[in-house]
Image 1 (tube, rainbow over the protein chains, first blue to last red):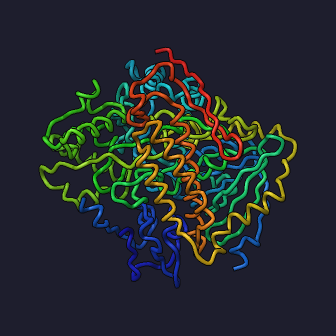
Image 2: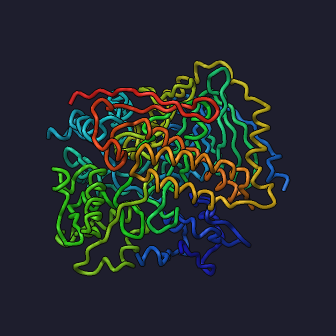
Length: 66
Length: 563
């Protein structure tokens, strides 16, 4: 688990997909999608760049459970 | 599909090319452009958010000459001599950091990021063996985007999302490099009179605490791509035998160490006892490697897990601490909250992080060996930031990156013509780069990379001996034939294939370098169980260089310190 995009809030501005340092976020049908969730660094850059609060973070059970 | 196979080729020229647009690289680009050079920046990600400080940064180390003896250039260099002894070259440090410090701080402010607190004061804390409180706490959340904006304002050319795959020389001097666009598959052939490599270290080489190789303290996009390419082109590397570790929150390899202990957090074991005084006279403010060493010993003795106790801090200090943690790692405060650490009286569990191929101290680097002008042994090829053997951390990357840009521009100005690139080698490179896309079946990059990680971790991550290192080299060499099996289904996976191969190649170099250092230093970063003591005769650099097709030659270069 990783960055999570609320499709209802995403306006397709592409900034998160443009800047994601791990190439994790891609555009699909005009909406940003977390294509490689396991490769997220949790740096939070996408959330900071999102003007529509469409991005939140969920932490994997392995992160919370150990 | 045609473009995916690299049929679209871009041939570009520049006076100074910068590979890696993180903190060091962008400062390099600014310096070279200000010196009048035509500059081109190439980044595997996007310079807006690439590199170690993508999501933010909260500390900048600086002496400010405010009066106390700890706040001077001499005291700072004394710190370097103590905590980076045998790895940092003081003469280079003076040139790339001390001589550039004032300008670097002014540059940060000019970019629109303040090193001051909202009330106008400068707040500094002490940790990591520092001589006094020299870690400026500041809000660097937007430092990277502001740096990218400064580059844009200077109209510096930038190519984002291009992974550089190889470097070419002509008559022993730097000529250019090749790479491909990980988003559209275009192939790039770039000639430049000088190049500065600033691509960080190799951060996915060892097993991580949760098993996910991207849950790392440092940026997982840094995979030794240019360590490998430079080494193959005959460039000397140094300080690569060291395996860096730090202390991170359990479950999330995020920064926070400097903030926790800088603010006065207590490092305690599972019995609630402070233990660092048993390992270093500076206790919880000891150098990073000693904090890691202490933690490892406590856990091994059955006194784990380890925690940071911040219950004694005032509400104001706690608020500042959590603010700083969120500046350094945007998502860390909510992680800590999800773990329940915001509850009254909670101890925050920590752990020793994943190992990584990186510098043994805050005050040096690990990679391309540079001199006082940031030049490598190959004319025209310079290095800056973590990718060099002498720079690391924000303070040195800001200052030293700029120094590298000045020197590279000066060098390029003296070169009359661009050196030619080898046509045949470029054709071969294009075929090599795209080969994993053409295979109908094969091994996934992650599987290959995981084997490398297991071997590296088991044999030198971080404990090692002649037997373990020799065995690691044999196993890593044994993986070579799988390289021909790597299969990518798209360009993203293609990038991961090349990263996996680069990690394997750098792991071999690391093991060879570690074999040559017959002592222990910066324990546990270089802990040889067959040579457990530090030997003053080994106070210096193990320099590695390619020897023949597959071999690694090593030589020793002594370093001298006044203190």
